[in-house]
Length: 204
Image (cartoon, rainbow, N blue to C red):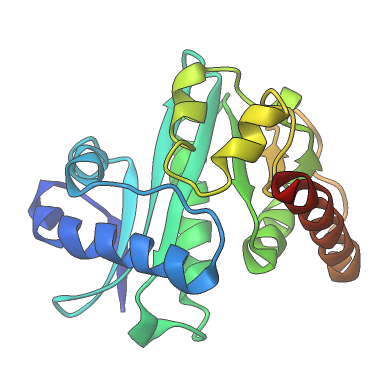
């Protein structure tokens, strides 16, 4: 398995990356913003992406988005092809994109929003902490990216203060605490509370 910084030579994988992200959202039944092949190509072109390849077969992907005049960067679109899941590949890609972010944007805060417990665990191990959305970028272009998510109406109703996703942030200026095990049950309870609260309101 080869995990490398993507470039223009990987344009041929843009469609399968886009399709894999879309299909994953359908299977999980959670909100993953759709990314077009054209959108993916831009990330490949500027060297702000990591791609995993098994020979010439696509295995996984993640990319960097830059916000707030380089004050914030997001590691987004983490995806592993179904043929390569449950092998620890997502964790390797996540670490690679995190290291690339730190190298290219050493002073930026790195953030992400996710509904996936597995991603929360990976973020936590890298030094992220759960935060409110107010601590993330206020760049409207970032939040526009949520428009294709099925839960966008929740984000709108709460005036971008909260959603089913959990915000997580890595601040390079904050000393990394001693590694502790993530309290998975606490995150699961939080997710259930959010779902019960927001989905109940939606049904009214």
